[in-house]
Amino acid sequence: LGRPPERAGSTLVERDVEVVVISDVHLGTYGCRAQELLNYLRTVRPSTLVLNGDIIDIWQFSKHYFPPTHMKVIKCITSMLAKGTQVYYVTGNHDEMFRKFTGFELGGFRLVNKVVLELHGQQAWFFHGDVFDVTMKHSRWLAKLGGQGYDLLIMINTFFNWVSRRLGGGRISLSRKIKNSVKSAVKHINDFEGTAALIALDNHYDQVICGHIHQPAMRQVQDEQGRSVLYLNSGDWVENLTALEYHDAQWRIYRYADDP
Image (cartoon, rainbow, N blue to C red):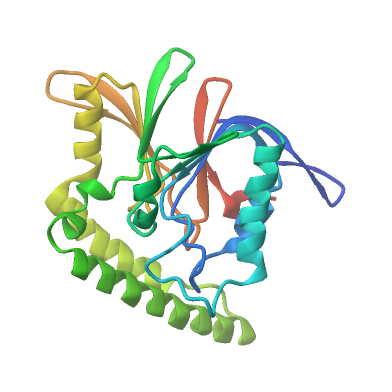
C-alpha cells in the first residue's frame, strides 16, 4: 500500500503523504538510528506528522551524548513545521516529563497525550501505549532498569556488528531477539494489542495507532460481538526502522530496509 520513495539519479524526491507516524526514536541514546531516520524524513512531505512517543529519551538522556545527527532530526522536524506540516507530539514513557506541558501549542505544533484525527470519515485514535504495559503499571523502577539494560545491550550489539562487518559478516540483532522474547512475555500477560483494540471499539474508534512495544503491525482485530477495529503500530527507530504512512485512504508500514 502507498508509494515507495522515488529517486531521480542519486537524489531522493520528496513524496506527499497525508499522515506520517513515527515513534520510539530514543534520541539521546546509543541505540538511536538517527541518520537512517533523517534519510527517511527527507523523502516525505507530510501534511500531518504524529510523533507517537519516546522521541527524545529523557530516561537515558546524558548531556555528554547528543550527536549532531540527533539534533538534525529535530531540525528536520522543525523545518517541516515551517513548511506547514501539522505536528503532534504524543508523550510516551521515556519522554513522560513532557506530560506536565500537555496542551502546549505553538503554530502547527501541539503537545498531547493522545489525539484523534478524522481520516476519510474514520476516527483514528493515536496514543503511545505505555498505559497498557504491565511493567509500567506495576513496577516503574523495573521498567527504567530494563530501559538502561536495553541501552547497554544496544551498545554491545553495535560493537558486535562492527566486528562482524570487519570480518565480512552481516548485521545480527542480538538485542532484538532478547527484547522480542521479553516483550512477548509482557504481551502474553497484558495483551497489549487486544486491550488497545477493545478500548478503541468501546469508544467507537475505527483505527487505533500505538507505539511503545517496538513491534510494527497492521491488522484487523475483531471482538466476540463481531466489532472490528484496525490496529496499527509504528514500530521503532532503534532496530526495526519503521514508520506508518497514510495516503489515498490507505495505511502502509514503511520499512527502511526495503528502500532501494
